[in-house]
Picture 1: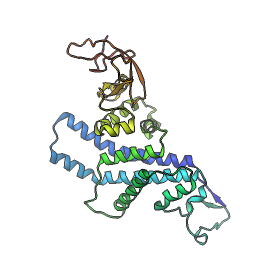
Picture 2: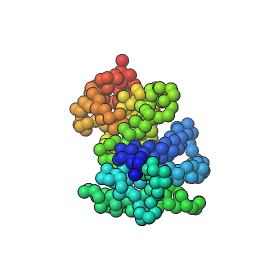
Picture 3: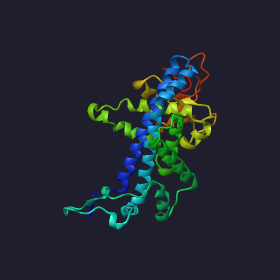
Picture 4: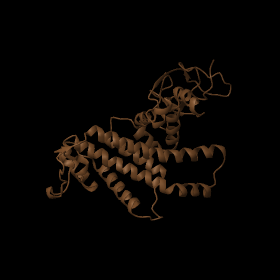
Length: 306
């Protein structure tokens, strides 16, 4: 008898936890560099030394991300049948020595290089070529990082961020990575001790402001569904939440629709559609005319309009 048979939800949860762990690693470096740049000009040589010191940790984040992808694909296969994951000849299977059954985890699983093929054989909807190519690239990089100590092997934190956004989009197209990250922060180990999540929304705003500045317009359009080339405004809700954590200027909200008379701001981070009034800011040198109704602040300069 085979016992402890996993289900697809358990694989999905484990996969997303790996993605979150990988994100934790790279976003901490990106925020550290961003914060340092706000206080002083960083010399090119110093930035190079920073990333060289972080190189192995960033590679580790890539390995973790790849493990997450493998778990996610296994979860999709398990939704058809968990037994498809079992590999090897029957003669090589573990034996039930004491009559209590054999744990599913005792069986050898199919190799990572076969996951895409097996998935596409059992699912009606196959992975597209883009995901297959990304998976193969990731798998090879992961193998190099796991089995060699080549000092020339390097991947940037920005590349890992993009990879995480890509794989999450491919694997969970109906879920927002922003929401997934928020859920993990709200359920972090520290919250189990301190029961305090007041800082989470501000931290999410800070992280995705850093990522927003890092990505190209086409990448922002793809992953967050907004046009970075539009005039950008401060999200009043993210500003309010951010001030609980750290003073930031979350200027990544856009008018929706993008018209001179539009009375709504959309923010991809908090997910809100915020009511605004089209009135001139009361700060003399501010040209803004988009005022948050709820937070009574100018969404151009961030100043209170009371």
